[in-house]
Image 1 (cartoon, rainbow, N blue to C red):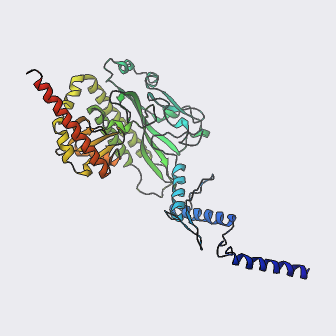
Image 2 (tube, one colour; image 1 turned 90 degrees about the vertical axis):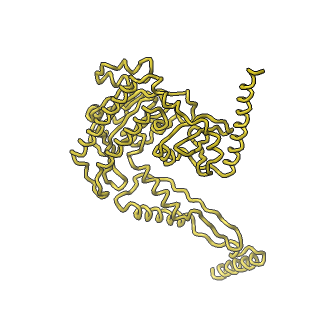
Image 3 (cartoon, rainbow, N blue to C red; image 1 turned 180 degrees about the vertical axis):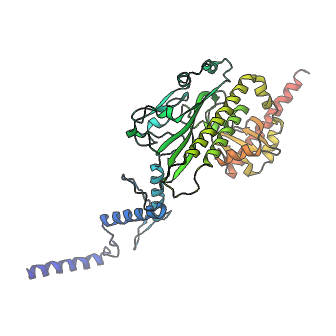
Length: 430
């Protein structure tokens, strides 16, 4: 046995010497950690990141994916680089997992049957549907707005079908009405996603992002005051807006760029959202439910918002089409080309929703062009409206070369338009 063992050892030594002479020794193939050890290190790093970010109170119950990207550089000494660093990638993956674990997701209701806000039941199936409460198994129910109003015994449902299409109705729904069919075992008493009150209203004729101005959709909206839990267990209070176009895009963004009535509705929603959020507890460590008077105050804010929206609906019904469009006629179209050529690069922006180019001129002038340089429209917007579009990244900066090409095309279209106007003016003389 000793002789056999010695022979084997000697053979391995000779093999290593031959490999060194051929340039394939340990220096060319450095030893790496076994896969199981490497996986253990990653798991430990993920655990430490979770504890560091959220403390020991949050432990995910289910496995979650964690992808790490590195670049390997071959050479005499192989090395790997990661951008961002591996630790940052692990922390980002852990943070995303925790975010997905939260029951509250803006624009989605929580489905107690699937135990998730990410299933297909969490969003309205059609633009005309509103949230109608939970089924016994915690499944969200969506119904057409007129049907919900009929169940509430509203006598004026026929106003939704006025020939002008400008009238809309609003209704406040008590939370007990929404949860009366829901069983306790399927979340009736749960604080995972607790609806404190709800408003439904519609219909609104709105243009989906990226569509032509003439292509409107009739949409209904649901506003919910919701108490839920953050990843660390603390209470949070939000106003959730449930409304989507047929393509799945959110409705709220289109309100701010619509008619004067739509902008007032947008402002009323933002005001209610801010007031309800201000009711949330300041401490982030409390695991207790919100006080009963806080829930009542959230309901009062919703009821005042419902009355304000109802008032806007009556105003829209009284206002004629001419009165609605009259402010739009005062548009600074004559300054469009001048402002486009004189504006700095920072004020030439890309509208990612409409797929157009926006030029911010002086005195609150805003001009819209196609990417081919053709003038589409001009309007006057206050500074707050401009800032809202910039904050939501609807209007985004353009590269200097793109701005240069746009100016050239706009100038070419402007010259062509002037020639056509001159020809039209000279035609009668001939």
